[in-house]
Image (tube, rainbow over all chains, first blue to last red; front, side, top):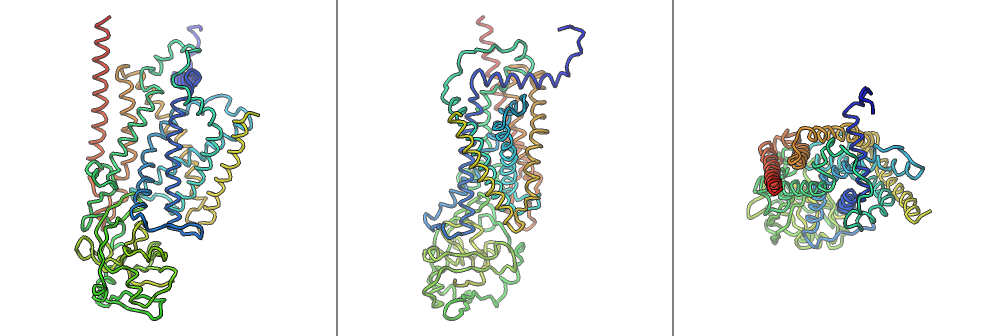
Length: 400
Length: 144
């Protein structure tokens, strides 16, 4: 090279060098880091998809899906896993994107029809994956800077990402299998270009150490948040949007009485719990509800946002209230809040959940009258249900 | 055609069909998941990653390659990347974007302080790794 030749812009040259190093590294050792990261991401996204779909089906029942009230804490585990796995996937995804980014810069951009279709499928895969993680994190942090309803958007894009992931797995399965089968890299058959290691700092965060970083990053984020559902670790939950021990009566609230606009209605002496749809409508005062046989059960509030907290609830069983109203045969009930409107102002309790004796119309929590923010005068609490279906400020039970 | 080739085409058909379910979910959501609102965000995230985040990450990679001694380069890069991830995760918490005036149980912690603690712990860990590497490097040089 002549010393008088105009040198290429240093930074662009560095990008080319970095891309060539990375691609050569893949050829020398096989794309093992990217393959391992891909495997970890595949597992974590599948867990997120399965647990997310489960949560969707529980909240939007279909004829072919049945969800049982036992074990009482199962939803707490599946939804806690959904959020925790999504959080742990953040460093995995960005490390994976870093590891494979040199391939985006390769030439030719598209090799053939199959390659073009595979690369086209990367757009929904990459954009959708980032979308799911960003909107999921923003949702648990109660931040909604977008013009769509979070659960609906998150659900729709989850299908798109899983579809794009299937295409990606189909394209990369044999490469991944080969890469993972290789314990160590083969002998270097391609020399490292002289001077390259000095340009981008070869002794730095090399591609093999990426795995260590991704695992460490996932561990830090998990430890900083998992205490929102695993109570013994709450002291470490420095970045948890909720703490299971913070809130009125020692546990969190999602929607307060003021936010729901029920402050006057719940304080009214005219309050009655009405049961309709049976042989004859029944209106129960708070004293009537206290006069029914009282049952206590330790059940979690398990929020879709991934936090959960277990409390001891006391009140009449829903089935005893229905019996008092003369209801013997039903297909479940709809429980309506005193809230005038709102997506979660009512919920459906299927017959098999009504039949569970621990499905309560709770009047007390941990030996105290319910706080207004926890649903005073009456809240529904049933085993193995998302928190959004544990209707607060119950005013009416309608037999189906 | 190889078996992996056949596998790819089968996966392509199944995968795009599954993506189609996502489109149907959007179109039947009564506006809750309006595709006109969602698709630009999905594409936008891919573009922001490829056109902004990845180049910025490369710039940091390149700069640390030039200015950070090799013994410290890996830990510094790792700590820098983790600082960015933790900060982005914590930004809405620290800014209290989702705070509710009548709900003390939502975002109940001092997230600015907590983020600082975590970042300090990350850099302390990086410092320990650098110290261990330096000592090992010194010992190796002394043996030569």
